[in-house]
Amino acid sequence: MAHLEIDNLEKVFDTPDGEEVAVDGVSFEAEDGEFVTLVGPSGCGKTTTLRCIAGLETPTSGHILLGGREVTELPPNKRDISLMFQSIALYPHMTVRENIAYPLKVDGVSKADRTEPAAEAARTMQIEEMLDKMPGDLSGGQQQRAALARTVVQDPGVFLMDEPLSDLDAKLKAETRKEIQRIHEELGTPVVYVTHDQEEAMTMSDSIAVMNDGQIEQFGSPNEIFYRPNNLFVGQFIGQHGMNVVDAEVVDAGQGVSVAVDDYRPELRIEEKPRRLSTGPVKLGFRPENTVLETGDEHGAGIPGTVRLIETFGEEAVVTVDVGRPESLLAVIDSNRPLSKGAKVQVRIDRNAHIFDSETGDVLAHAEQSQKQPA
Image 1 (cartoon, helix red, strand yellow):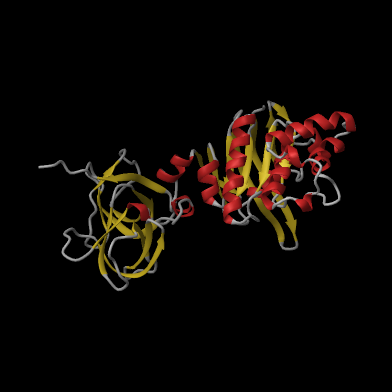
Image 2 (image 1 turned 90 degrees about the vertical axis):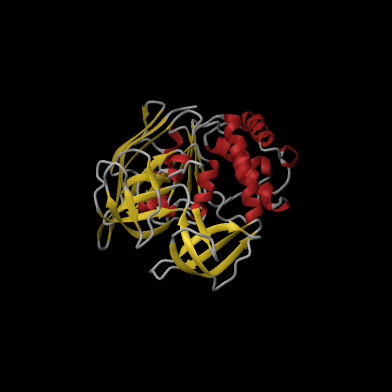
């Protein structure tokens, strides 16, 4: 096991139109046994960062240290890393045993000395009975396990994985995700995992780096990223349904902060006194899971709207509400609740909300709904 440290990494590509900054001052660490995920939209720099760590790209500047050793200028085979690509890429003319042992062959390990490590890797992945089969004889899940076994056979200091689940169907993706987590817990080796799928990031990681335009917008645990986003980008990118965002105004920035969305004033409790909060326009963000829809004679103010779409997913339904603004609002409700398209509703905030700067998108304050004492 080893401690991985990325310090102020930068990668600039020369293009016909000039220079393109793909990675811009990225810094983070992966401790022994830590699962770190780089997540973000296409083109955000996550894969280029991983390729720099692997030695497949040479950084323009910055440092990469593994176990305290500078590896920034070392070739890939001298870095004590193992890289799993998006494509399974098993050699069809080789047996599973030969595929698993191939990285050792490239490293110059003798055939005799490759046998036991390959068998051990296969046992770890629970495919030891398939060692003498050809890849074409395996199911998709078994092929994925063979590819994982090939990744772990070298017993590297750190595992790098570049969107290894993106080509799998939903069922196989869920199974393989659990398999990767099991192997990580068993081996305890640091993992740097790249994905554009925020669900993978949230369910698999100890720490997440949310990337955008070559930079890390926020680095923290899944709970920190979800409940305390640094800015609008993080808030809207992370979460199964994204974050509702509406134009609002701080009407009182004193001890009892008050925010208004037109005539609706949610009773929010600021977690800590913000330094930059003042009266004026802001963005108010709240998640669909923290959104309440009131109908009929139910009392309480809110943002008036009309139900435009109801999508049912088992016990839950996602409701799209037109509130006369550029962006509709989403609410997650019980799928058994009687609600129909065209219904008039009041949209209210329940629990967590976030106040963002209307121009920069940076977070100004995290808040919860005030809890009224029972009479």
